[in-house]
Length: 111
Length: 115
Image 1: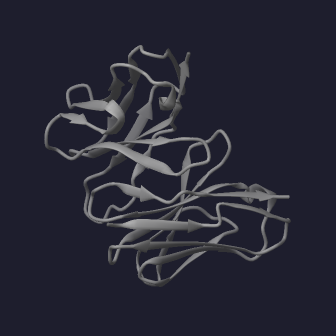
Image 2 (image 1 turned 180 degrees about the vertical axis):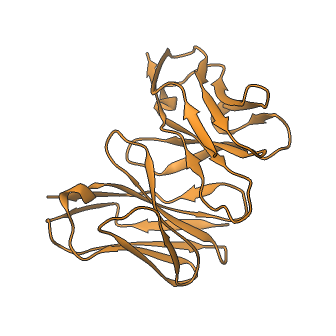
């Protein structure tokens, strides 16, 4: 069966520090991968999606970047965090029309 | 353009009473529709999905939803609320168009269950 792993679960980082969040999927090949952010009191915002290795589409201009070095690995990064980067980050994968499967999320607090 | 509207940002029900969470969609094509649930500080979990088969879809935890094309609605219901149902619920549409990978999320409905 397919599983998705996302870590860490919580993270507190100072302003200006770098960020790396990792997501891996097991039990499937060539998944579509997504990074979403959920800010307090707001809905889900799609940040990046990827349909294959090295193929990244950015949905909003921001301080973040994403990479897909392997088929089932998706990384969210920042060189210098801002206070506004705080939020709940969710990784997800999808196949062909069956809906998303979400990771358990990372709560990022930038202080 | 496709869109999804969740008509209520907050819903409160008493334990044991029915739940109705409303969702309307707009789509030029016959869409795939989903309901997800999110408990605090957790990822989203799929409750049920509609993909052009039966219009009444049964999901996990006693939830069901009915696809009504004439009303462009996909409301989520449950006959009897349980305390563990307190969470945020998202209606999601997957536009059925070539090359579309981006699902469209509603803004969410927070369900409160009163003892």
